[in-house]
Image 1: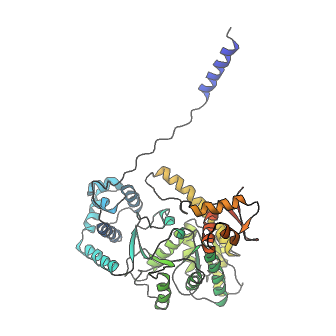
Image 2: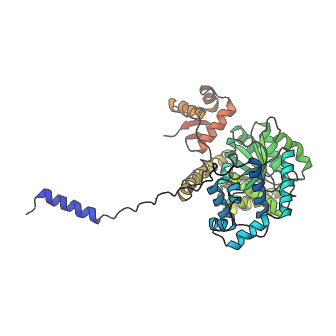
Image 3: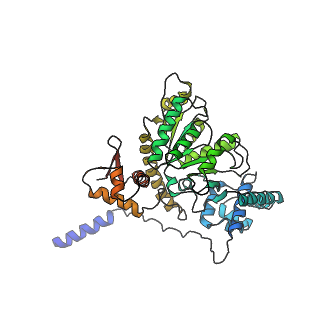
Length: 433
């Protein structure tokens, strides 16, 4: 008769045998990297290859966009992609060989090469530059888009705080009540250190841009045309003030070459840029068929929180806002803090998506959208931990030895990351339990 010890051992062995084994995750594949020791990359050559790629993608025989983005991130260089043979390109992108050969023919076309040379001359002669998807200055939120632009034309200087951006949208015909609401929202966001996004048109766009600059905030203007062909002479002084060389307070972005004229297609591309750069979109004023509703629809499709400001029931320029609220696509925005609360949800969702993409695509190197924590951030959190009661902005700035605008910007960033809590009633900050 087996002893009790033997019976216990047998039962344990049987239970272990019956317990289903946990599936083991496959090891992460090694990312394919461009070897700089084997291939020398020149900055001018890289820019020419990037422009050639962009111009070729505008033609009929373009490569599959999603696969091309994946390949560029994997190789780490446009130059590396251009040095592949059609057969290698076909294997890398998983497309038919005739598409890769057609792309090779298009990109070597003399007319396309002439376009590239002319665009390079314009870039060298002016304040504008072109950013690649692989550039460190490429907007971090845009990296998480399903099909991020391969290139961005930029005027001004990108800043890390531009990741915390909220779009304020509205009509080009700005009534006094609309101007008052636009001023209210832009002022609050600027004082909180949030970058304001606009479409660069007259009306609400111009109002929020002027207000944000006046109150020390940053502005990103996404154009639906080339940076040198926007045809808005009334706004030129505002654009110059925004991107002044010595101390730029914002930047202008475009997804099309410098001399591309405005068009419906390009305007949609600019609105799509706004939708993916923003953590949340607020429609200040819009008519029932207003252009702001296009950007609102794109933001909704991109999964961004959409908010609408209500107005007078009979006012014509708020019917679009009421339509968004009635359809359930937008939530009610009673004050600017509602937009910040919605932006917190976006950061959490993007962070989760980032973790998944790092597993599925090991070469996906986009960092956290809000960037890494810095010494000043940790100092603010330490002050909140030392205090038994919530603290307001002025006291926190004083104790952390930061000026008020810098403290406001960093506190908003920590709030978006879900590390601290803000009470909109008392205007005080506290740490999470």
